[in-house]
Image 1 (cartoon, rainbow, N blue to C red):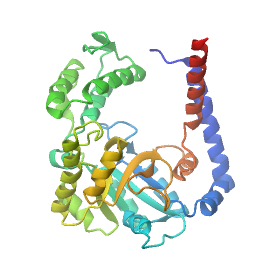
Image 2 (cartoon, rainbow, N blue to C red):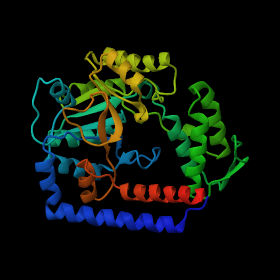
Image 3 (cartoon, rainbow, N blue to C red):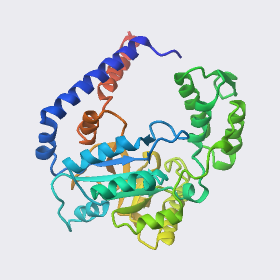
Image 4 (cartoon, helix red, strand yellow):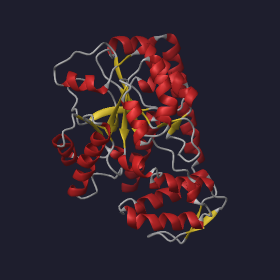
Length: 362
């Protein structure tokens, strides 16, 4: 489906409005004042994935090193960074936190966390938690969604023959929008499969796109030796991001429990330290999953729900803020946890959908 030019125009105008507002609040000092006074007892948790541009990863997964450094410098100026364990003891009622506490996390265990992020964090004296997917460490293989993304980004073809339920046999992939639409179809088709059933289909897709997935290097993630060397640095702690990064709400209870407890046991065995924080893969969780995480001995579970935390927050439903490569004033606004860019467009989409439904009933 071709992008709606009116919608695209509205989207760009709203982004300009958000950006202008962010610049005004940032450079006037109003945002800083709001953070220091009104948010002094709220606890943001910002999360990154990879630091340093990697051609094999989607653009929204990696942050350029210079951008990361500017963002960390901003956080260091405005906030008091604390380790995640301090939040645990605070929620247990055993410790007070400094004003404007802030927590930094990384999901996945990418190599750039050590090579690019750790030196910056060490220079600013900032602690962080890295959530490990143990399969990534063990196999050094890129996640299946990223392999498909790489194949689509790398292909020179304008269409691909691949039959999918409810669609035609051929799919146009001439531009980024069409590639994203095809990726969404593939993702929906493969998401519920296990790795054994999924692997040959991914190879078939790559072959029909004339892309060799063997070109992807197997050194994009930390090794256990590198994790151990970072663990000796008191500013870096590790948590679990599961064994294989599935949607824990769709797999069987036995598999979900194995993902939660097995990853904890493996990381503890490799590092010789207790692992007490869990990050839900893709942010998906339920009451049952939260219970499994608690019963496994974790003290917290982090989500991708945007927002701030305080003493009343469920420790197994911690809110977080995704780090994005945006101008610093907009980053400062998003990182404060009070506004997420794109919210205005979401409201417009909601109103538009409501109007369509209302008119459809007439």
